[in-house]
View 1 (cartoon, rainbow, N blue to C red):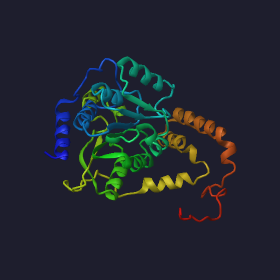
View 2: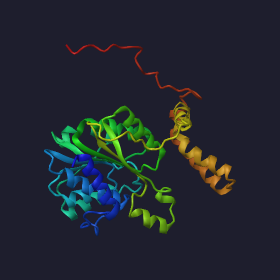
View 3: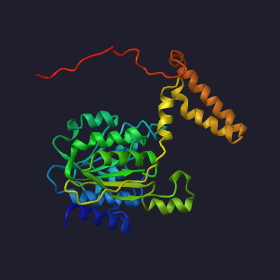
Length: 318
């Protein structure tokens, strides 16, 4: 049986049975579906005997996936990258992860408390000569962050490796997956699954169902250097308007106000006067915090090149 056939078997088992090991169930909860966690456990079980193999994830949150894997396989080094800059309004998640790690005595779970790009650029400092056999990407879900996780993580992957990309319901996540696959044909998508909406928008009964499934969607990639699998890409839009809009926002004088401005526009379009008043206050509050910065910019087409050198050459090393 080939490695890819074994991976397909692990996916089918996760589809049918969910978690492989639930011994930490009274300690852990979080924002991943049971099938996703169960698949990660099965994939680590499949690859744990590879020489110098390790597990790596980006986006630890409160430790559900990292500690579910580490607890089930105490002999496997498990690394989690997170600087807890998002989804942590009260600044409590690091403490929660540390407390849960201690309670489970998961000494093989190692937290890399850094921005993911910095961590991936110096990952050898943390994993040494190990190779990543199972790689979970579940951090920031903007297009660039997703793609950089794939590009920077590529060099650390073992020959027999699997990438699980979480929250693939988001179309910009699917777009980054598709772009990576098109530019790296040695990887193939082996499985995809989606739910009908984000869990935050699900009614309680639907949420309970999808928490036992893939929750907010997954794309699963496998290293396929022998070209065993045909090309399979996640569904993406032909219309690139949102990506063009991103460029229009970035160059604008008030680029940082975009999220608040969209909320204000929504309240105006919905005719919600109370929401409009609140949204307007938020826009102005953020504007005041940035006023000294944005006042130095042009109304549009800011390129941020004023402090760049006019030109420079690169030179051969020798």
